[in-house]
Image 1 (cartoon, rainbow, N blue to C red):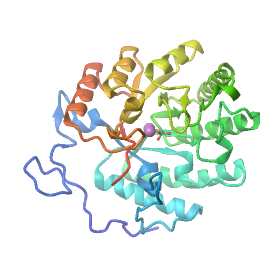
Image 2 (cartoon, rainbow, N blue to C red; image 1 turned 90 degrees about the vertical axis):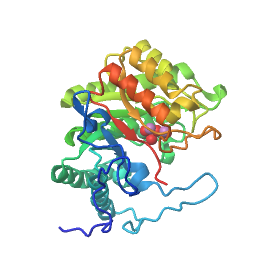
Image 3 (cartoon, helix red, strand yellow; image 1 turned 90 degrees about the horizontal axis):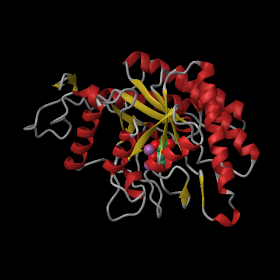
Length: 345
Ligand code: XLS
Ligand code: NI
Ligand code: NI
């Protein structure tokens, strides 16, 4: 099948050096330039987030989406989902990013039943695998979306409903399997709705035990199918819940140690989540690095004047320099990378 280019007028973005005036050229990122014995691309391991890049309509809390995506009919068919994959890989190729990340429900629609959803997912994973093969692009990590569907309104692993727990576990099982099939370097658990709004209706100890139980089941399944990728937890303090159980790096470390999970998980630290937790990005990275669990990074930033996860692209040279110094000191990424969990503007 020959697909029409979605961005026919955009060439591969070249490196042109600091003096270039070309807006669609890299001035500092020269992928193959050697830095301290390693090409830049291997230090940075840039990944593009499927959700923000392909699926985010760019709405805000007061208005509807403004994104224009002429290649996307906005529908929920498998065919549309498969077509998006081609556009995404064209984007990766033109941008020169080596990795990507996705949630199961970003790439494929959700059906009426779990088996229907799984079948649709398989149909899209087939195209993802073919495009990876064609382009040499790799999956940095996969994850399951356990927060959009109304069944997860009160949490997934920490939902008071056992059916919801079971559904979440089954969804995670499948998401680990497809990540494995696509040669994913890792798999992320972001708590989504694993937290609470008021203790009046919440048994916190029990909910944390349930969360640990789901993670132990995931570790078991990983071993069972021979998935060698790294598991990560992505801390975030709030939003959508008031109190999130995996609120910051220190909170996650305590949780992992308390429930004997510390040997199986590292952390995926996100800049905007660090600042929401009242920490600096570097603080969160340092806490993780000191405990030998700094695995991967969601590279974005918040707005200092807004109190929510605005997921903007990192722009501060000072902050990003400090991050890279810390990474160099740590010996660089192994399975992780810099995933732009950032909205396009
Ligand atoms: C949301 C999180 C999410 C994770 C993946 O705030 O950053 O995008 O990275 O589920
Ligand atoms: Ni993130
Ligand atoms: Ni986030």
